[in-house]
Amino acid sequence: MARWRSPDGRTRQLLFSRGTGGLLEYWDFTSGHDLRTTGTALVTPVPHCRHTARLSVLPDGAGAETVVSLATWDASPNPVWGADEDVHLAVHDVARGLLLDRPCRPVGERRELADLRAVRCADRMLVFVAVDGSVVRVLDAMTRRWATLWEPELVDVLPVDVAGGAGLLVVGTERSRIFAWQDVRAHFAKSGERPAPIRQAWWRSRLARRAGAQPSPVRAFTIPLGHPARHAALLPDGAAYAVAGHTELAVVGVHDGRLIQRIDLPARCLALGAGPDGELIVGTRNGVILFDRLVDRTSRISGLTS
Image (cartoon, rainbow, N blue to C red; front, side):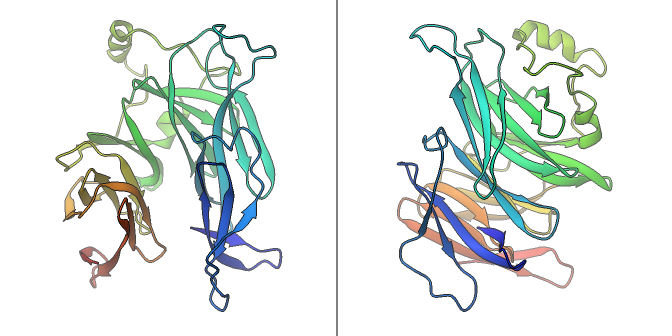
């Protein structure tokens, strides 16, 4: 769901969906419009038709939101089976077209690329590429430079406030960590269009003992779930986020890791999102579940009801 800026300057609530065949559609939920059973198709360019591509909703800084598609593709001029791939990261705005297309790993590196994420932090877009279940590479779309976070099993990245400034909540399968943007910013490469090679585990542990060798989290918390987390969503107030794994869902404080609410789901969670008023939308194989958010006078979450 995105607050879409119309040509007349007004915003509309649009629901975007892309199927396994690559067809991108949207539904208009603006008051006064008839809701159709089928969406309006939009053109999705290659390589964003692939099932590994991901849609992300980002604020545009002017009260509306944009929808971008993230995808990786083999940019080798003469692809040959068994040869080293030159893998690029492509970011496409569904309304304006291509935003960037950059190499996302060193030439010759064969490590498997995993999940893609994008957030808006400190008035810029950051794109995250999980690599081989060991690290996450971060691309600053403004400077076109790369940084690296040692984070296994990335679930999601959420923009948060840290001591009055911008920060990032990096959610993994078992823990969440908060980084201050200024610290992450200081660790971007000064030059080069490609990210740095990934060092072996023994060398990374040696680097970790050196002060300033990598961004240090401001806080770190264990995720209060009995199963590995697979989905996360930030609530609109920015003070809490929802996280889900298997048939468990929890609402957790961003800055203290406190368990605010725990819910047992009737089916495995396959998707998780937050509505503009704090609703939680849970996608399962058996259908969609909507939880209303109840807020007390202190603006803290007091409960969730379905």
